[in-house]
Image (cartoon, rainbow over all chains, first blue to last red):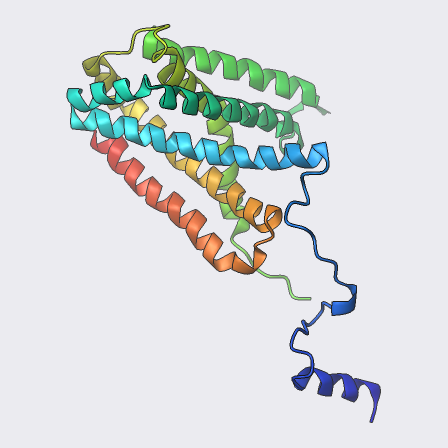
Length: 149
Length: 117
């Protein structure tokens, strides 16, 4: 019996129920689920990824605000009253911290994903980050003015 | 090895658009509606004027895009966080359906809310 025939017969038999093709059992190491807690850059990475949950949460809150606006003045006043509860303010502070972290990490990453050429030269990354942050402040001021100006 | 054809560029584009629009606009909404007004640092817009503002065609489009793209941003990022962070690659189909399904359902609701107001 040749070697390969022997290996094939091993796969087909039920002798090794954990056999996975392309993944020899002897050499596989298992990563612990919390592999990222030990090093600061890994923690930052996971926190950055988790900001998406808070972005999503606020998209839901925006829908709640629109829903209240659609139902009438009483629903809107009730929602404003809810927003004044310590629970709501605490929730919004947590969301705010995470979405700010999202914005900063997103703008810092922008030069990696975007190449802007000025003439023949590439615009330096720092200029793109600075431009984004300046635009962020202007847009935020505009929205704030529309809401409470 | 055959290259597996995926829809990832499509989902990634929505992820990128959502990441950008939410980075620019979500923090100010959270700050004004959720912190500044409730703490009394500014007065809340009255019902009529906020409704009028939200009913402007540009506002409708803005609110729809902001909500929908933010959801797709979450869907894509959360999907990979579950795969890599918690090593749930073996639940791929379930996670894929849950993440993008939620974003698609939210997009439909956002369309009704923003354009039906």
